[in-house]
Amino acid sequence: MTAFLKLKVFETIVLTVPENDMEKVEAMLKSYTDSSEIALTRGGNSRQESVYNGLELLGSYKPDFVLIHDAARPWIKRDVIMHVLNGTLAHGACLPIIPVADALKEIDTQGFVVKNISRNSVYGAQTPQGFSFEKILTAHRTVRRKGLNGFIDDAEVYSQLYSPVFTVEGDKQNKKITYKSDIQ
Image 1 (tube, rainbow, N blue to C red):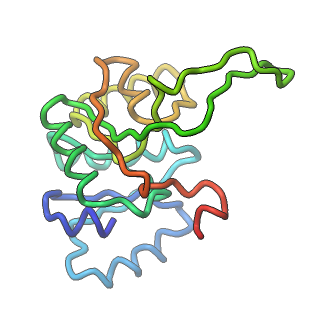
Image 2: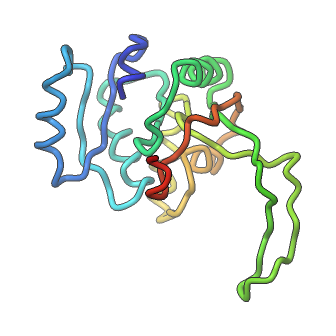
């Protein structure tokens, strides 16, 4: 969140927070000099539900665009945020990507390799992901109304209704905390 605040280009930052942690987070935010630009809303049982809750709250601010970022990626840098922001403004939707280093395999239900996947056209998606606000809100509302869930990120939700998402170079340091060893 600090990286986004320091840029001074965002009018409002919405944090989705587990309901049991709301008071603790509100107290932590008091240490910021101007926490008026930070709004809190209840998170959901899934990432998709948490983003939906955040977008619904953000709707009252009537933004033109939104960047959606995972708290599990605390090492975000200014350059990535600005590249995504500029890509979003130019193309309506944008996400940062990095090349995949591992050999990729598709496996069957018994654990056997059924397909080798070329790394030449496969990339890892990161956040923040940027979108025209009205389009991503409409996309989230649509998949919710249809009872669709399990989307891996907001670019996938967006792609259910709209054109492809533009990509910009991500940052290998913009790692996602998934395992305990990632914190080291």
